[in-house]
Image 1 (cartoon, rainbow, N blue to C red):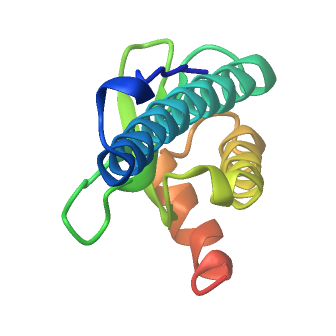
Image 2 (image 1 turned 180 degrees about the horizontal axis):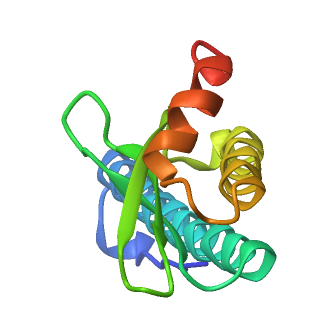
Length: 133
């Protein structure tokens, strides 16, 4: 957590309050960024640990209206071919459980077919049940 310090004797009270609020806001933003980074690392490691190498989760499509982007799952097979699926959730901490459940079902669908189905084909089967949730 970022700490801050202000020399209150060198400024007038309204200025000191404004400086304190600014410093606190900056510390909060830095702390939120650290937590967001930790969450992203944790969820990516969880997916790799549970489903093995070749499964990668990332955020894509960042915009003014979606600052976190959406979650995208990538599956790279041993023959080095890859397929992707965009999940119907923003890539943010609040959607962690939904993302993990969706990834689990997609991975199971691919495994059920002995990796003979692409992630995109599995997504056509699995993702409709997650739309709007």
